[in-house]
Each structure stands twice: as C-alpha cells, then as structure tokens.
Length: 110
Image (cartoon, rainbow, N blue to C red; front, top):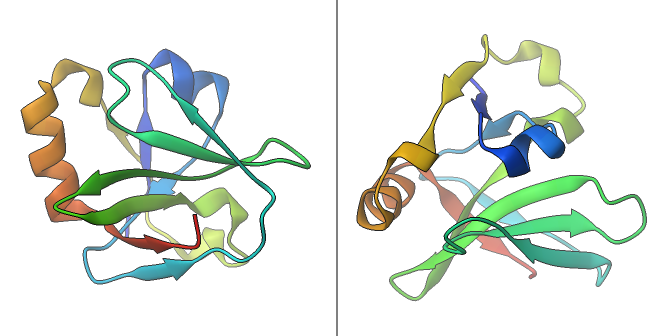
C-alpha cells in the first residue's frame, strides 16, 4: 500500500500521508474531533481537537461516509510503500467523487 501526498494548500499546511482501501472500515472513538473544510468543500477534514493532527479526510458518497486516513498516525507506517504525489485539485467535483468512491473505505464515529 502506497500512501498519497496531496499537493493542495490545505494538505501542505497539514502534512499527512493518506492511505485507503475500498474494503477498509475505520471506527473513530471519542468526541474530540474537529471538522474542517477546504477548497470546493466536497470533503471534510477531521482533526484531533487536542493536538489538531489530521486524522482522516472523508465525504458522504451515496449515503455513506467514505474516507482515507492519515498513515502518519499508524504504528507501522514504515511498512508502507513509497509515497505517491497526487493532484486532486486538478479534477472536477464529479471526477473527485468518482475517484474517492473507488479508492476510499468507510469511516465511522464522526
């Protein structure tokens, strides 16, 4: 699994290595989540209220919260493949939603 590095201004200000799999299901526990939006406001960026670390990015697609997580927070991040640069800012809103629907897993607890 290769993490992705987005080159948009928001992601550059909140460094992360995003990973996802369409079969993953992630459960976040607790209420210490701060939700932010950026750019075209299609996606939500979920941050820890205590340290402001980016936890995940997500979007409601077909009635389900789909998303990707920040692999920098994983214990075994060094076992992932080399990061891949991405530029979703160059995609239309429809192209983003189609791409995310294919790549992102399910997020729960937000």
